[in-house]
Amino acid sequence: MGTQRESTNPDAPGPDPRRDYRLEELGQEFDRGYNPNGYQRKEKVAAVAKCPTCHKEIPLVAETEEWEQREDATWEHVGWGPATGVCCDNLIVEMSNGYEVYPLPPKRLEADLD
Image (cartoon, rainbow, N blue to C red):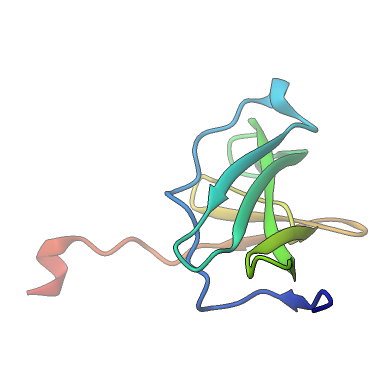
């Protein structure tokens, strides 16, 4: 059996919520193991961006977004998705020519759901 490639799979749930990374970890990769469906999950501190609201430097983290199937039916990491970070209700995304900033929707409180 040869190897197959697959891009982002909605049936491959991510690992536990992303941990807080530090700026000093720039360039480091973190192996998060395999999810229940056999997909390897990795994260990498890929860039640093300045929040447009508070001007604090924040790490942008890329996650596994492409896999290759191995002989043992597991899916190994082979490619990264875009590096992203959140600060001051902004989603900051690394692009090939810089950064894009997208406002996140307001958080709903439990009381708003009643």
